[in-house]
Structures are given as C-alpha cells and as structure tokens.
View 1: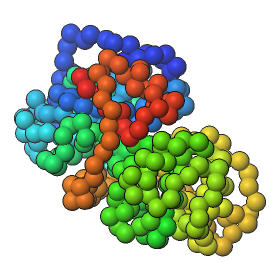
View 2 (view 1 turned 90 degrees about the horizontal axis):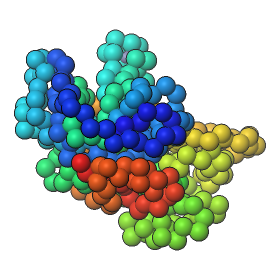
View 3 (view 1 turned 45 degrees about the vertical axis):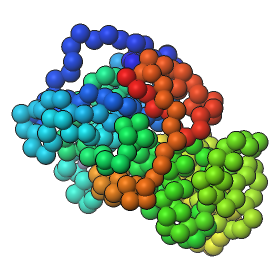
View 4 (view 1 turned 60 degrees about the vertical axis):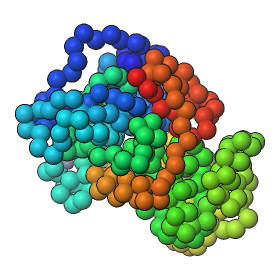
Length: 325
Ligand SMILES: [Zn+2]
Ligand SMILES: [Zn+2]
C-alpha cells in the first residue's frame, strides 16, 4: 500500500519485483504490521519530506527469507521485528553518546525507507529485534512502536507513584501494564465523553479514568501525553504536583497555547520524547515478555489500510490496528 502524496489515500500497488536486501539488510516476509499514529501524521502531511512514493508502516513483524552478503546476526527463518529507527550514522555526537534516537542522519522505517504495509520489506539487520516467543505476530506488532515509545516515555516520566496518561489508545494501553508492573497508580484521560475508552482503561487497572477536561482526584507526579493535542500540556501541568514531569510522547502535536508561568513554577518539567534507541527496544521487549504485556488489537487485511487509518483518525479503535498481508 503506497503513499504517492500527502492527503491522498494509499494506493494498492502490485510490484513485480520483490526488494533485494543490500549488504547488511535482510529480506522479510511481513506477517503483521501495526498502524501507528505517526503513519497518520505522514499520510496527513504533518511531517516534512517523506520519501515518496512511500510504503508506510514501522511496527513490522515477519520472518527472514533472504540475507544480504554481510549479515551475521540473523538467519533465514528467524522471526524479527522492525521498528521506526531504521538506520543511524554511528558517528555523530548523538550516536557516540548513547543517543542514537537523536542521530542527525537517522533514517526512519516507513518514512525515509519503505516500511511494512506490504508483503515484503527489507531492513538493516542491526536495527531488527528478535520477537519473544510468547507473542503472536499480531499481538507483537504494536509493541514495536506504541510499546517502545511508551516505554521510553515511562522512563522519562520517572517512578513517581501517580502517573497520568492522556489519550488512551495503542500506546497507553501498553504503558499502563508496564506502569502497574512498576507499582504505579495510573490515571487515564480520554476525550471528554469517551465512556468506552474510560471503561477500557479501568479494565486495564486504571485507578481513575475521566475526560481530559476534568481533574484527577489526586495530584499527579508525572503525566505522559499520547494525544497530539497541545492544549493538554497546560492541562497536564496544572494536574501535576511540585517537581512533576510532563512528557509529550508524540512526534507531532498541535500548538501549545500560552499559559501562566505558575503552572511551570516549582520545578515542574515539560519535555518531549523522540524516537527510540536499540537499547530501549531490547529492554522493553524483555520486560514485555516478563510481565507479560497483553495487547488489544483489531486486525485488517493489508488492502484495508485506508480504513484502518480512518478509524484511528476518528478515534474509533480500542487498542491497536494491525494490518495482515
Ligand atoms: Zn548519528
Ligand atoms: Zn510509531
């Protein structure tokens, strides 16, 4: 499924040639590919300069069917996951300081490189993860971005007892399981009036769930914003206690309205989380298998990618959409 131009529906393309893996790449037969909000931002033209025409998708689970000449760590038949981080330079100041997520030359899957809305894809073996055996292909797919970015956001939010999650979709439904495993109380915020979303959060162990226009019953130690809504930044700040941390976990957000300094005063922190490192992936997949994290997914045939994106855009999904070729 190919994006030719921003705002255009994806187009079903029958390609005669299966892609060939370069030296350090593997050819993967895609079993499942999750649909991430970032895909929506790419399709909706909210992220600059995607490599068009583009096959989106960066929550890929598949099996390796061919190897490039320099591949050493992966064998034919291995089941692997391919995340958003597709390649880094290894040489810039960020790469050399354990922050490859900020690499100035980074190439991202389903954005600069063709991704997983396809029957086959190629990926650099150094950026693939082994998928723990306890997960089916479909259940594992959302771990590769929703899970991973949520995990990085959780790390940035610290270990304070009361954690708010704003936007209760694919990422939050995984993050709540990790947070509860760490002994945190989770306060879930949905769109006002989204009773089903609030009930979904309660079934996953949220101690409180309500609309994002309301206030939690207790002050929060930290909050993670998964909803791409800038107005939630001052709202979350006003719900956090002294020294509280507000983490913006999405790649794109509407403008943040101005707000009085007193909301930031007393050492509150606002920060973003960008991309992932391979260390995040290794850590998260190990923890996800230990807990074990259970993902809620809705499967769509690959050819219904536009419908899956539309349902995500309209907030009609509970959990994560996964495309099955
Ligand atoms: Zn770099
Ligand atoms: Zn993503």
